[in-house]
Image (cartoon, rainbow, N blue to C red; front, side):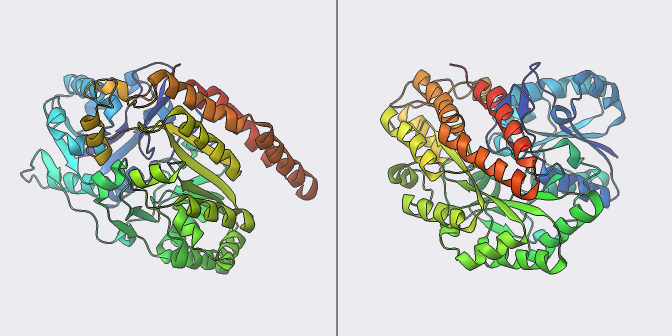
Length: 474
């Protein structure tokens, strides 16, 4: 059986759909960054290990055209696609095209959208909907069932994996790590790992936790994660990693991982994404140890800029914890990246702009701003329906493309769009931010003859100017 795992090409010329590990779907007008599809890559690695003939094609990342895929589609028995709300109608069109060329082709789809609404995809050409948050494991079970010619229900439900340590080492050749990058990276040889899946928090907007993982968290052992880093470093030449775990556990896991890296003297940068409360509770000694081992950037998912919003979205953190976490990271000399959601329906313009000022006051090295995505199946989606916050038909999936707000409350759609532009502009083009970054780059250049910080600044400028600022239409 020959399998194609496909990240679909864009329907719109010049618009790049960010799918896979991107928590917030959007179309980008430029190739600012491509996040490595870690879970899909584990799926491909497991299929290869199990003896399947599988190809992985990320059409947007590899700049593969639909015409090229259609030329090869007749050679495949099974195609695997990822479904996100904004691109579902396009995937339905694609599957019909593929089956016209290859009538015997079986098509399966996974993702948060189809797990909540499987029937529409089954009615539009897909043979199977993989209902499993660990869709790498789900795809493997489906392929095995097809190979053994078992009777397979179209809504294919698979329980979560019990032990993430059993995942194989990533085959970074089969899913080519060189196609993916972050604009903020400090080393060109950049790759991803994933130490865990899920979170214990009940954030009302999080499709990953509510749909994929059911408010649970599972982690690899620090020994297993170290093996992944060591393998990426030794066999592929990767010198900087981002851990794409939903919630990185600072201690004891992070401390133990740092000790592993120091013991083996691996020359790597590693970056994480975690919660403010975990960092706030981390000691200066622990942060110093992690920094010594190569920890470089800590990404914090803040999502709200005041205690009322944090409580309303069930974030499980407070403004005091955010300030303490950021102070701890500054004191440790670690770089800080914050993620913020804009346009909560209960916030007025004054409160929303105070959020921008709050982010600036934290003096992070990077900040990312996104419009609300009330993912289907989350408490926020239900709340939006009940309160009449949808300003576009939620069943018109094309409106979920991040080009304009889909929810509005105290602010109008136009005000929210202006807020988005203001957030990116006021943060990245403020004199305070530019001066801090230039000072850092000059210091590295003069003291260590390290000029990478200047390249880092230039990449970041292009990503903001030619990418993020052009996503939302005013």
